[in-house]
Image 1 (cartoon, rainbow, N blue to C red):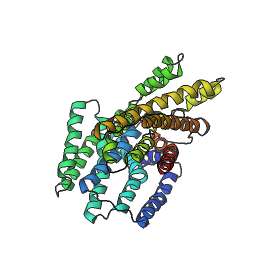
Image 2: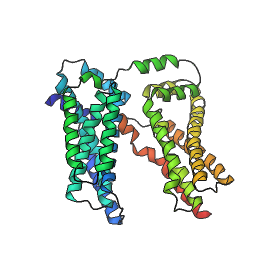
Image 3: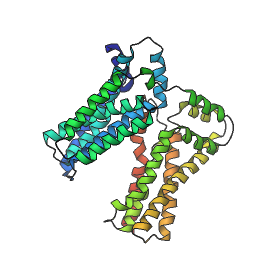
Image 4: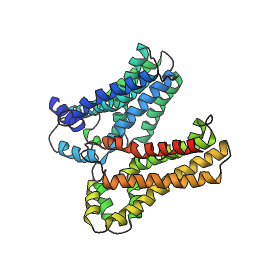
Length: 379
């Protein structure tokens, strides 16, 4: 089991555990920067626990369903192994990766903006471990969706209804033990996603337009569609968060925030085979980049349209200049995303989670935020 843990750990943290070594200084810098800034927020304990649970579970699930994970697992399952040891080693390594490189950063931010009691910190750490075990258990039982749905809803109910009570920590610990018992009896092969779907996708797309390829690519990658759907839902909720901000400035900030759609901006980086094929064929800069830019533009414009529709419904006052600004911001963010993806693709990544959370994804939204602030200050 020790050898399995070491193999999986090198897979997630790098050959010399460099990701783990980089994570702690980053967390300290983030904590210290926010702490000395004096930024303080009022956060209810159940919100704190909900954030830790959902964020950590999302990171684990994202790693479990990533296509690059299937390629790495293929070599592991070819060797003889004990199913229980394989499952525990894999989940332990993946959980350590999620907690120490991703959740730790969120904890640093939350610890800097609010003072938490030792009991709340302990319960937050408990939520992180619980989220890892629960996400892995749900993934192993994903074919039994009625039971999985009841399991997830019960956990959400415990967080939302009992998150501020003394009952929450014992119930979370009990659910963590239950998830661990499920993993003990899980089939190790349930964590191995075969690559048949990707092969079928390539055979379909040997001919046809780039636009059709992009739409079908998203259709075959449900997690990409889910992320886009979440962004569109966030577009409808943003006006509620901006109710105390001046309408003109809130609209521009909303357009900038809605350009943060990670999967759409890394379609070349996440598929090295596609990038190699595109760069190898002649005249592909125009043939691929123009449809790709139009595709991102339409997705961004849809989010901006939902945002404006929600704003009109809740507050009113949507003007013609806002429609023009929506087109402008959607187009500029699409051009920026395609430019970075074509000239500066992300390489040397091990897990799709690293790709999704690469700092480069913030460059275009940050530029859009600066532009929104400049335009808002000018007018």
